[in-house]
Image 1 (cartoon, rainbow, N blue to C red):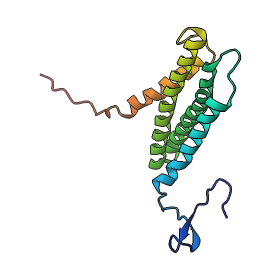
Image 2 (image 1 turned 90 degrees about the horizontal axis):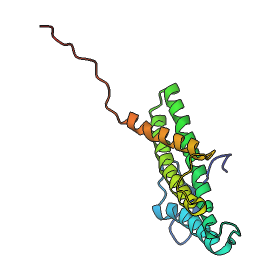
Image 3 (image 1 turned 135 degrees about the horizontal axis):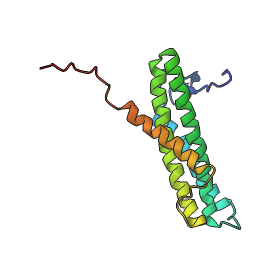
Image 4 (image 1 turned 120 degrees about the horizontal axis):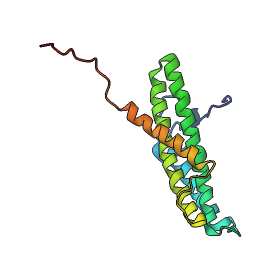
Length: 171
C-alpha cells in the first residue's frame, strides 16, 4: 500500500482481456490521455456547477461568479510563489541543481497564475466598482508587489553574467 503523501498507481498486466494489476514503477510514464482526463473532468464539473447550479448572488448578480475562479487562481498563485521561494532556499542551502529548476518552474507558474488573478480581479472590479483598479485595497497592492517581485526575478535570472573588468592601458 501507499504511505502518507504518496499516490499508488496500478496498470493492467498480461494483455487487455484480463490478467493481473501491476504497480506503476517510478520511471514509468503515464499516458497523456489519462493525465489530461482528470483535470478536464474537474474543470468541466466546476464550469457546470458555477454556471448552472450555483444561485446568482442577490447583490452582485452574475459578476459574482468570477470569484469561483479568481480566488482559486489566487490560492494557486500564492502556492506556486511559496514553492518557488522554498526551492530557491533549498538551492542556496544545499546547492541542488534540481531545486533551482523547481524554483524556476514554481515562480514561472506563479507569474502565470498571478497574471490571471490580476486580470480576473480587474474585470470584477470594473463591473462592481466602476474602476479597473483601486490603490486603496488591502490585498491589491501587496499582491501586485509580490507579482512584480517575482516577475522581476526573471530579469535577474536571465540577465548576462557579469564579467571581470578589463584593464585599460595607460598612455
